[in-house]
Length: 115
Length: 108
Image (cartoon, rainbow over all chains, first blue to last red; front, side):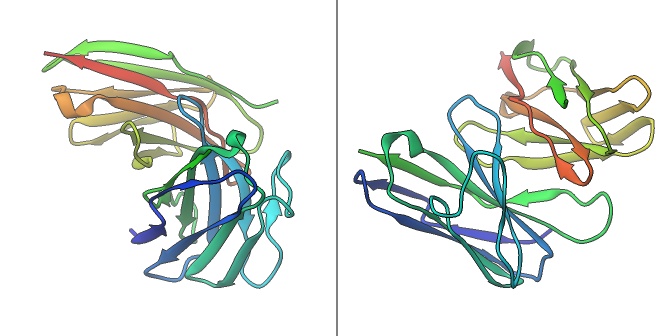
């Protein structure tokens, strides 16, 4: 399976600032996803990062708050903008190889705390 | 709508067997994945079922009944390191649907 490097692994940020999370894959992948998971809760899909075009956002998530880049088939970034304490969460990057029945594999996640 | 139902928490004894059940309602069903997630870590892939029946992989087996919207994960010879959350994730129109998972506690 693909090796996924996500950074930073954790950060503590001030309210109102922004943080960019990076996700690097060791092979070309078609699908890259960004999730958020709050303690004890299920994974919530923020958006699908599309190579060469704008990301596809899920209901409740907007580009102004969570801008995403996908410049090539091995790299993506998620920015959490104008952070508030409600944004404290684990943010996870995942990738899916092409073909039916392929699992998503996850990076180690970014643990974000907002003061 | 789409819905996943798993027990919130289960407790089992080291060396025993445990079955974690999952029922789901989805449209455009493609298959079903099981993931393991240790506290504070990312989920890791365990198994995938697309056809009815049992898929065995070492100590872990997963079963699917598409007509019943039902799956289970069977863990044998439980070890303390199996203490984790287990996520049932049906795939609907090639997108994974995530529930809150089942927290499995293993006692000595």
